[in-house]
Each structure stands twice: as structure tokens, then as C-alpha cells.
Length: 164
Image (cartoon, rainbow, N blue to C red; front, top):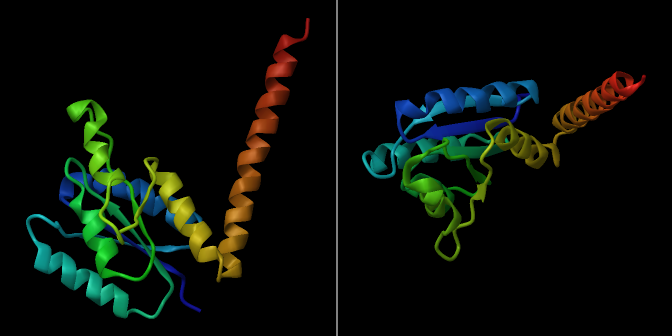
């Protein structure tokens, strides 16, 4: 059985380091990431063709869009596909964070989720895809157990350091 697909669509090559973090986390959760570049502003026909091509793929999928400043890509993608879209814009110091508003405010009928941390965007995709895929669901459970174990180990360590 083919792995569920995570299509990571970035607005430009500058977004690649952020996207690689998403892809790595997706792989660790049992998903198959694909990285593509397509701009809603500069190459809308190309971006639309990419979305049509992946929508035709019968595998379960989630799209993660990565675009900063004016994040038209997430709304553009969400309006063109039936699978969930997660906006994960790259960090930006520009505009004192006000550029996030373009990811938060979408027109009626356009509903991408917004997750700022790359690994968490992959985790949300895995949780969505895990609803229908027991292997992905197991990978999410194992990830959550590792996270919990780390907290318990850290707690034990700090308690030991406090002993006289």
C-alpha cells in the first residue's frame, strides 16, 4: 500500500529550508512528502496545474503551503483542492509579524489551517491522514509517546539535580 502523500507547495526557492523541515518530520511520521514550487502571484497557471495533477492522484493527501508576506498560495490552493490545506508560512521579521494576517483571514468558503512550526504542520497532516490509515495513526501515537517520555526523563533529571 502506498504511503499517504503530503504535497509541500512553496511560493519560491527561498522557502526550501523551511519546507525541508516539514518534509523530514513528515517522513518520520510515515508520510511521503513531495516538494514543489508554484507561486499564486507569479505562476498561477503552473501552481494550478500542480494542484490538478496531485488532486488526480488517488492516494490520501494533505497539502502544506509555504509562502510568506502575502500568503495567497494557501487560499489559492484551498479553493482548488478537496483535500485539507495547512498554511505554514516561513518565519519573518518583516512587518512585525503583521504578514501573518494574510494567512489568518481568508474569504468565505476558503479554510486552510494555520500552523507556524514546521514539524507541527507535518504532525497535523499525519493526524488528519491517520484517521483512515492505521500505520500513520501508529506513527503519531509513537511520536506522542516519545515526546511524553522526554518530559518524564527531563522531570526526573531536574528532580535529581535538586537533591542535596
